[in-house]
Length: 315
Image (cartoon, rainbow, N blue to C red; front, side, top):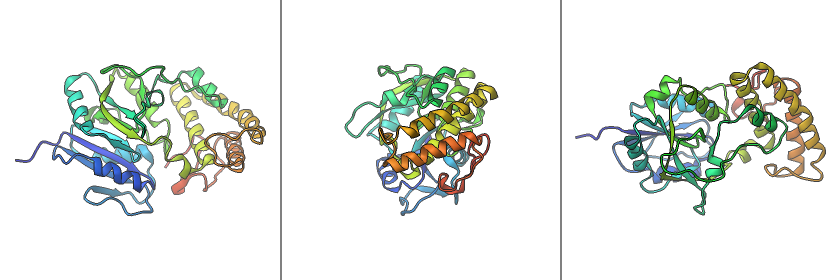
């Protein structure tokens, strides 16, 4: 007798085949759990023995997950970056968590680094306020990280979607992830905001533990690519949830902030930039993008042929 399909893992890959292989090898051999890989782009052979959807172009994280939702009939879905790896019994703990908390529409597992240290400060955050977003537009460190890790079953506001489990019907009811947040960043913040507005609880399930490699996509994007994508999507989020005025103000604030940071590059290289030259180029592109409403195209910044628009990048 075939086991009932309970959970589907939807893993989004973009040129990260080595870490994706680790995820596949750690996936439980259980007929009640399937794994689908959505390939937005690869340069190395993909893992064998698992369902792979080669998309042919970069659909972004949101677009790829939404396609994955249409490919499964599992009642639960676990969306994942390619750089996460479930620890033993993590998947089973998530399934049990949904049984334990029938009100939960989503469950966030516990994320840890390679040394086992908790990533709760990065992973579990409050929904960003208008003030927090405007401070970020000034390139200030205002992400609202939590001060301590919450307990089992705690209600959450905005967990990162690097690994996040959902009741599939509820996610479909919300329309899935907003694909306008392309190719990544703020699509999970937007979804968490919509879930909160709809009264859909998100709970913490630390019994399900995932190892996570933080920031693995940034080196492949480059510092300039990261800046343009992150801050244009920040402005998109502001426009969607706070209005056109605040999105425009954030874009205006980005111009002097990025130019001031550019002037300081000889004294201090930004942590995410590998060289001062890369930092200077990235900050200049950020200022230029903000000046032109993200309408100035630069194909080197947008992998997969994506181009910016006045509202931010889209596929």
